View 1 (tube, rainbow, N blue to C red):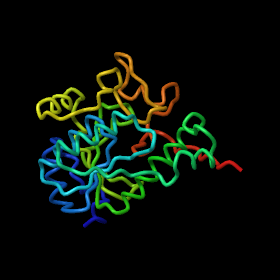
View 2 (cartoon, one colour):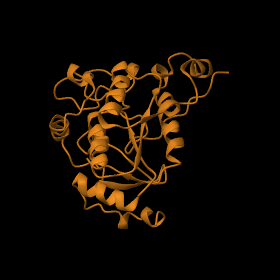
View 3 (cartoon, helix red, strand yellow):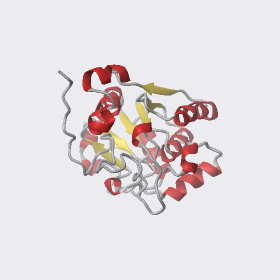
View 4 (cartoon, helix red, strand yellow):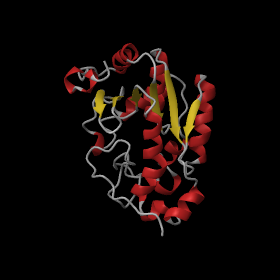
Length: 240
């Protein structure tokens, strides 16, 4: 069954309503689902809808060691509010070990490598035990996400990737949060539109892309987990 799902022809691209998408996910993957989240508003909504749909899933937060305190506090609030446990997936290298191997503040000199070490590879390792994964990706989130489908094959991880909010606008996400009394990151009320690691996240100006505050001043707008239109990052070498 899983091998057959690799064919794009059998994936239900016609499904657009989140509850329909998640209903399909529950029937197709009764166990082993992983929801990978940075606890952005869309991921929180995807999580809430997944719980409502009765999915059996693990919720994963990529704890890079560089997250805002507000993000970590939000994780605790969500655990209490939803009665769940959020797994903290951490990179094998501590920040000090990374500095010794690659130099101080790698995120300033080679942010792609830093993301690879602290986010991309740790998630890939966790997804090896998954049957499929769920995200909060939306088509209107940025130009690099404009072609996202509700259900798609992820060749990088060898898994079906389920994006139940693919067709929702940002306003609908916040409407759901308000209607269901769900918390969100308070930084979103302070000019931030997308919250990642402290050194690589800044507020946005009115009219800017949602991800304009990520790696500001660089062409990079994705950490590498969801890359579609971005070339593979140049690998950095450890210090000799």
